[in-house]
Image (cartoon, rainbow, N blue to C red; front, side, top):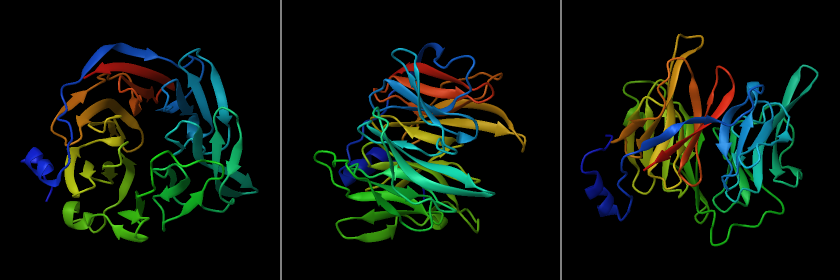
Length: 323
């Protein structure tokens, strides 16, 4: 059963000290930060807040938009690199799944790009299929795949472990279910029986767009054909947020930003950006423009800005907020 009531009594009882979110306000209007003549999408903030990484149509390539001098740097132009790529927590690396064609056949591999030196490290072979999307371990020493058929781990050479951190547990999706792997016990376990909790009579429950909070204490994820959820990992408390897609956590883990879209079965007809408290109690609408499709939000590392794209024209915007 999804739990909402007596929230803070429950949290106190398990020893977790989450902050009660307050209200969120927009400051001014969105600022376009991408060139008028370029088509970019899916912005992601660099951990130092100085850049937005973006990709182009069909997720081809990864590029850096400097918010300091407006310059554009190409990280890679490789096919598919912009789908599911991830910054390392220290901001020195980007890991991506890239593709190339040999004749009629497409092959994919995982590569790590060092910023700003340009050094590239290929950490997997090119194969006909690399299932899943790459994610960094909490200590930054390896990459693992989520949304895959089995747990796959790829060490990254030359990257020191983050000071004072250990791999601990990683959370990922395997065969449409959410799992955790404990490195101390070397044990894999299903995190929660989604069929029992949220199936609502469905024969299958497919999880997509799972993202882990910056403090690794909560997750957010979507269910195909269902709503957006968050979960507290310590006690597996599950919260239904409502309709929403592609969640991104605030730096303090108290909120998620996401998009709410409509379509006619062939194309998007509407899309706006919303913010919700992590428990789904408080919601705030950030955009409300019937003539634009605002999508793919990303929260700045200082918590003061939301970046998003307008997928109909390929522009990147940032919106200042306060809370």
